Image (cartoon, rainbow, N blue to C red):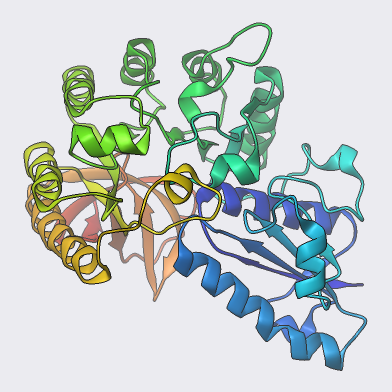
Length: 415
């Protein structure tokens, strides 16, 4: 029986697609192996959102070249956002690769009709469910629309059917994915909205929790906020990338909102969902960003106090509007300094936020064990570890928080 190995880097969508690939391979008689030396099929699922992610993927691919030379029968395939429309160029540069196929597509040697229905035989307690692929926004810095194409929503009934089956098999939490999850349904004749899908999924027996990401500030509706507040299974955790605190930079990024719009949206979320955990993305060093504009981003983080901020220095991506029309004129030294400033600031902010949970009871869904301790996340996405001899896998448990840090919490089970 043939063996397969999948190496994945990048976003949650990549992880979801790797899970679907694994399920499809297993349907076709493959067995998963951890060691590439034991694999008959190796798949590399790539990311090019940042240069360092692309570099890591290319480095990993080059590491497989000697293995292919020693064992010509091994199949090597590459997918993800690194694979663009110029596949012939990739084949010329990497002749030892057998297949290149685009992100979100079925491997060309397998039955495409099974791609959308492939589900893991033993799903995790928490898993990802893509609901819309691609993006129509064309933010100036982003390569995703060029690699994943325009938005295409999955039928609501198909998603509901999939989540019901996942719940039947033991999945207790799903995270609905989209490059712009708020756009879900606009391209379907019936025009269902994300709020409609959340309402349908909320009624599924055996499903404990629902998350959704990533939201776009210009597209997040009041109805969605009110629905998320009302439904008991929807986690009170909102991912809302700001990207910058300056209106001039937001305009240059082509984000489609002002910082005043963003602050108003945050106020509305916190009014409807008072205990919401807020997550944001920030890019420092975007072309033309001045020190004063950067300080506006510092003020945004200081004022709003996000639970999590994903920070990155601007990385030019070939083919994007920023590369075509703007000079990468912020020095690497300034990018690094600004990044460090925000990292330090955010660490202090989340230290204060998490310290408020000391001595409180929190509920987590147990997802597994790490270094002998059970771990899981709260509804607001706080990672919590605890020790106990019983088997808590896939269960909701209540914990007393005994120790806090910026990155995780430690608790004891509260029977």
